[in-house]
Length: 360
Ligand SMILES: *Cc1c(COP(=O)(O)O)cnc(C)c1O
Figure 1 (cartoon, rainbow, N blue to C red):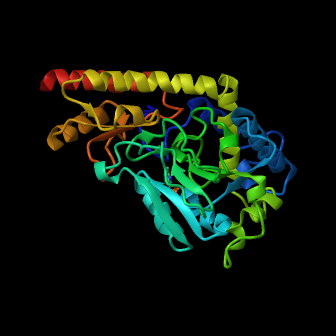
Figure 2 (figure 1 turned 90 degrees about the horizontal axis):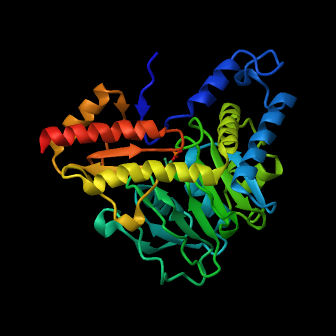
């Protein structure tokens, strides 16, 4: 067996110790005589798994009691519709456009009401987070929507926008459980877990209780109504049992490590290694403005497509996988999520150094 350093943007690398633990429980979970995959979601064993996963997440994120944690399906993309369906009472919302994922969210919300794009970084291929100081928040906006870490372009909000009292909704898919967040500042936080916490197919939605009501847009499907999920403990129908089980292990891995402050420090150290190298390289350049840099996704280029290709191929031969950039940006992208060890980033930087020496 030879495991590679997997820099994929998602689904992405998982902590090896968690994979081994899951392997050891594959045939029999506890004394249940069966795999978690084979278990009824109504069984006592699975109920315990669900509650442990939720409680560990509440613990590491310090989620206040007046917030519900929902485990739902349909990907982060389905929340692009669920957000307006559950929140658009005035049929108006403000969006900040920072890339592919907000463009999709904006398009989806536009099917249900008026969407005002109050700031955008599209003019410079989304390489920065727009100025947040004097946002024109609409008086009748039901919420203000952001994507806090932009997976494709490698930007992250350096601070939260002042929403002037309006509900803040944040897609944190690619920075979920990578650093502490002040949950009180948000109405809704949601994440597809396949970037930083688990396998594909599970979405975590953290919603302030007063936003969970029966007053949703007409035609909202039962399963997309947050109240359905909240009233039924995410078990209105069969949830993604395997995803919930796996995420529980990852949340515990973070907790055992010392929590999200420790996780953040580790992530900062990894990111600094790569960014410092990029800032001093004569060949490779980061594409994002310094004040907007992500800790999780780091896009970079040589400025020459042939060299980019050659570098990606050389990395692949050495077990440094999935560093090809998103098709809309080109070049390379290293996703250095929680589970990527420092040694992985070091291996990438070593390879960049070698490549630079032989090409400059
Ligand atoms: C990956 C991603 C999505 C889409 O997630 P799906 O689960 O594939 O729908 C949405 N937002 C962000 C920020 C992402 O990184």
